[in-house]
Amino acid sequence: MGKTTTTRFDVAEHLRTPEEMAAYLEACLEEADGDAAFVAKALGDIARAKGMTQVARDAGLSRESLYKALSGERTPNFDTILKVISALGLRLHAEAG
Image (tube, rainbow, N blue to C red):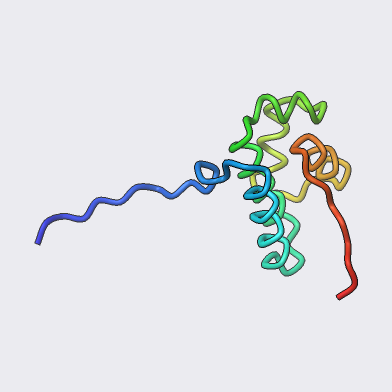
């Protein structure tokens, strides 16, 4: 039997439309179970799909600080989350559960 080779899966390569980005964020919000860093990482995936430099510019942040905030290794400030969501062209909403 031959050797199996694998490649790293990058979800950002599969987020092509605003609808796919919104659906991905919605799914991550449902799975996060209160983990803000998990949600930040999902926003980072979407930002990479859209173009990190442009998202940083639109959010009024440096590219480096955006990478750090959305790395999933820390919990960014809520104002940063709101800026990024807006820069991504997404809207945050609530509904009764």
